[in-house]
Image (cartoon, rainbow, N blue to C red; front, side):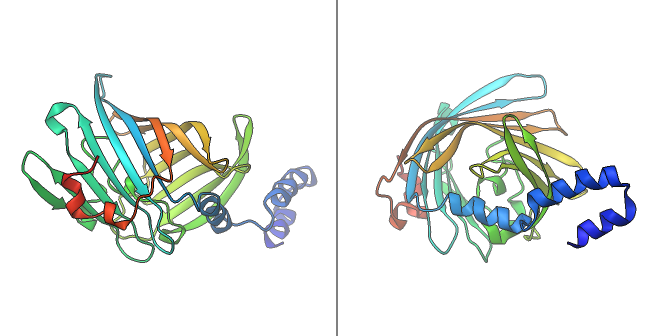
Length: 264
């Protein structure tokens, strides 16, 4: 293995032993392999719905609470489709986001604003912007698709009681708000436990921590607590899943611009 040869040339024998063990542990696996396995482990669920609470905190720790519901449809051969609708507070009730992800082309997203009774298309160049004032961007709400990034496996390390692959990914989309992401993915179930997001200058921008995983249909894991912290502004957003149901019988007809005004 080429990496091992380099190690032999530049380190003493005691260091060589530790490096070669690490190389053997990840030998034959690439960042792309891990991304593919992550996607494979989360394929075949069909559709799901969820109710959530969103907690926004400013730099002073002051909180505002929002309630929303989501419908998600798995699409074979392309990205997934989703609709998120706010039900609380009153001033944003009925605001809805339709996201249609794609593998080979730009995602499509539309935001319905009930106060204006109009639907606004989110342009590709604006997808790095905050979703409804939260620390989640429109880009963050798109489904994970392997083909959208390049990958590099950095290392393996402990993450709590598990072992995680640490994978660096580089978005291919020129309009992405990120230069790269670094994710900790456990080697048992291929669940993401943490992701660091770096801005276009390469500075750490945000960290997403995903905890309280629950298993559905004896196959699919979903985090019930997602905490996004913006290191540059001091703001944060928690997204707490409270109710998830699978295989509701959703179809493409449930995910159209016309549905934005009358979902849920």
